[in-house]
Image (cartoon, rainbow over the protein chains, first blue to last red):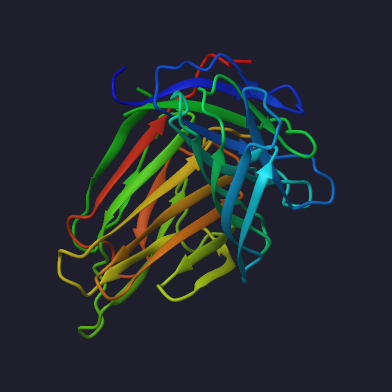
Length: 173
Length: 179
């Protein structure tokens, strides 16, 4: 496999909303995966939504995370969670944010195709707004899975809205 | 490969770069900048804000926007935000130092051709001059719904120092969904 970044899959929700987005049959010919998303959710009462992903259909508590963030023009903080049933994909705009603004996230999964080692995750996400209510958050995560990742399911607490879009790239080192 | 160089160049002293006629065939855009500010102020050293303008925007313009920032100058983490008209704030570059000291930043614009979305940008970058510096993430929104076909990369005062390198890349989408 030539070194570099190669697009694998793209899902664009052009016709309507979806509760989950799943990428199956992920090729095992790369070293890392990069998930790039421009999305919005329908989570009622929220300005932004925490959105996660699971791998290989696993919902047991093999996931954990550490984050740091800034939001609402003045608040900074950190967060850690262990033994979770999913790992952060990123945070995306929700109904209480300015309409037609879609949040942005890039999520790197290192060594996804390797056996015998756990998988590291790094997420870089922003949600914008026509007000001070915006979020910038960086997350490192862990997936305690020793086998290769062959599928990824993107989830949130409601549904992904129409025009949400995710692309998966493979990176060969 | 899926990340292609589209256009770029090197600035003259006090200059900026306009990226025109951007192809509409990619999914996302990425701009990479490496350089310093040409600003001078009585021999002092410091930092100057950088900007981008989408689709021929230049200050002042009535187009609405907003910027949110998370950054540090080395002691505490700072979060702030502010409205924008026209240009969107990206990061800061050093001024007043020797030519060896430069900053770098990467600007991402997702789904830039999608006419159902306002445009969101993210910039990550900074600089270090061995005693001071900063690292910052800026996010910005512009109420442009049209496809982005032109971008100006500039600084707040004085322009880029001669030799600043600015490059535009396009990332492709796939025809396969994997669903």
